[in-house]
Image (tube, rainbow, N blue to C red; front, top):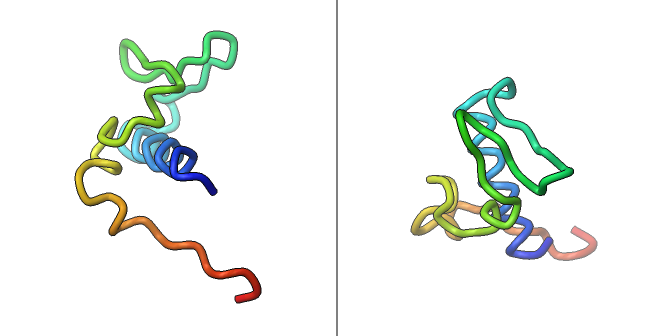
Length: 70
């Protein structure tokens, strides 16, 4: 998994866990993640620090991939 993908998933996971499934949606037609009274572009999910999940030091908290064959 690329670092960009990991960041996006961590940010999306944080939004869903902290706002709830009823308040977070992906609008595929506009490439927008919608939450609350607004939203952000999909690209924003890839930004470190977009949510507390990817704030300073997030790399040390992220699980590391196992080597192939383990």
